[in-house]
Image 1 (tube, rainbow, N blue to C red):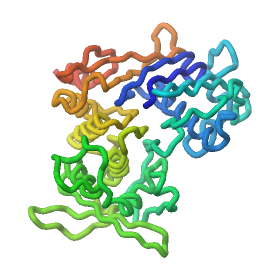
Image 2: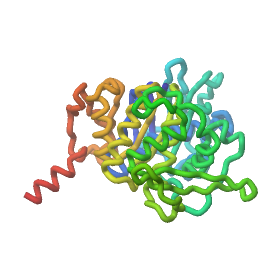
Image 3: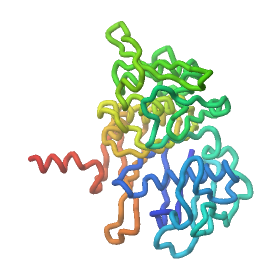
Length: 363
């Protein structure tokens, strides 16, 4: 598990030092630095996969950030960028020289050895971006190596194929088993949780090996019977959009690390609440999740999980990103906390307050 992240002169942060929990919720207005935190981790993984951290690779599989001038803090006092990640048994401490026009920044403090068993560099890591697969006639299928490594693709483009290939495997995280039902298979658990987020919906997948593609359809449960199967393009957009998120969470094993951007996108508020509960229960079972969200419903799902004693309040970290009014160049983070009843102790301006603000105007 990642315990701490430190940044220096990286994008909007002159200095940032955050201690992480099993569940980490990143919130704040647009442009406040939430994605920057995720990008720091993605850069390290991207660089490790390509050149073993001999340099910071700014453009690659996970992120494309431009060149040195695009990521150096605007008022940096020295032309050096530092990213440090501390895990339970190891620490990745790196600093990179600044090069204005290069997309490969030299590592000035190279590691003597790659940290052993770092979750950031192993197959126990999964990232899903805010831009995910949408309904379409056919979906790409992954190579066997990608399937074994649980590579869903940044947009979740291989998640459909993964569910078809490994849907019969049991879910290993006891805390996400729906209503403690006997059938622990990934396929059945996906159906159960998806039916909470989008009631009555059941996915069906078929693989065309000749075309190297997968077809996704949905049936609707009507009482004890199912309707005909409909192509995903003829069913609600949000159902397909959230499907990779549900598959990723349910297939995660204790000790895995998930980075999720805006999982609530295109989902009804009631579904967002259940998504929050699923995220919380996964973390209760030993998965670490860093989630960027704008949804008060996702937050409420997490709070309800704490109140129901499905997740310890101490396992939740909320990070609200904002700009310092005294110095608009400096971005900061405040840490509201949740108690055992799901109540939040600090409510900074802009944090889950838009409903109250609008209601006051309506009154």
